[in-house]
Length: 171
Image 1 (cartoon, rainbow, N blue to C red):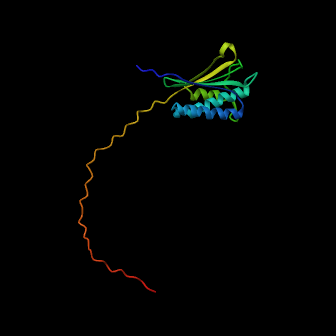
Image 2: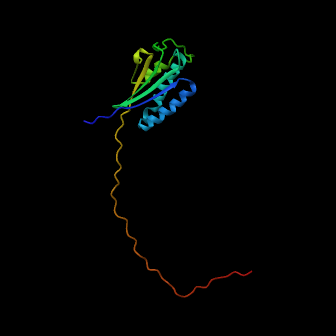
Image 3: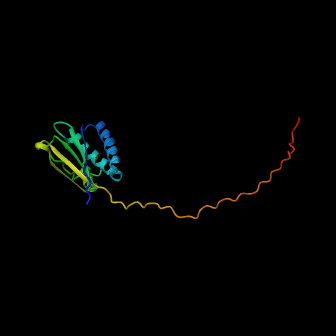
């Protein structure tokens, strides 16, 4: 039985709008490095939502940590902050509301999500998981056997040793 080692990456930041874009680029590059291209967009959407929640709701500060952990075909993304209040899913949102749907969207797109207390009871951790899509093995192209190319037969070349007349135009 072979086991796959767990890969991990962590980023500490202040959840400000310009930093969120930087984190998205870093995470995208890391997931490409881990060859998780099929789940990059969904992972970035979830990270953006969680960081936007830290920016909008976390108290007393906006400092947080984004952690990625990949093993056994599953990516777990965690965002921890210093605010102990758990997030709430917006249950009563109007069609024109511009916020309140993010965690419901995360629940719909991920394989699972949740919260837990932060290390040493400081703050909270909000996490979600994504499974790497199972893909069929790529068939290996086997070159078809073909008949060898015919060898060209030499054609006799007629050489005429006599010089040929050349027409020269005069004006």
